[in-house]
Image (cartoon, rainbow, N blue to C red):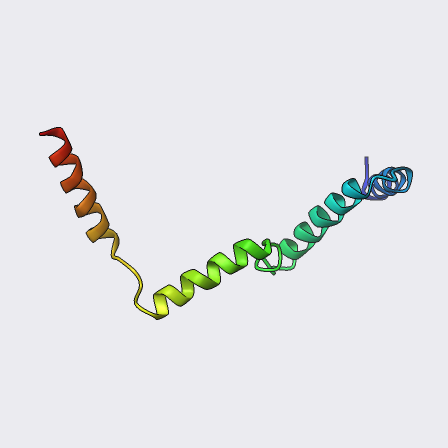
Length: 84
């Protein structure tokens, strides 16, 4: 099936449905795919995902981070204490 046939089939399915939830989901999927193809991966994320990224960047800027090595050392110490 070529691109034209696929477009026609998708359009037919969209036209035949009256389910708003289905249409919203189709729109979201197509928008996400188009944004990713255009290299705009940030626009493809949900608002919650974007907020989480922004919070993480703010935490880095404000020094609210712990080095991976420090976290791993802490976990190893806790595991060793647990095993005793």
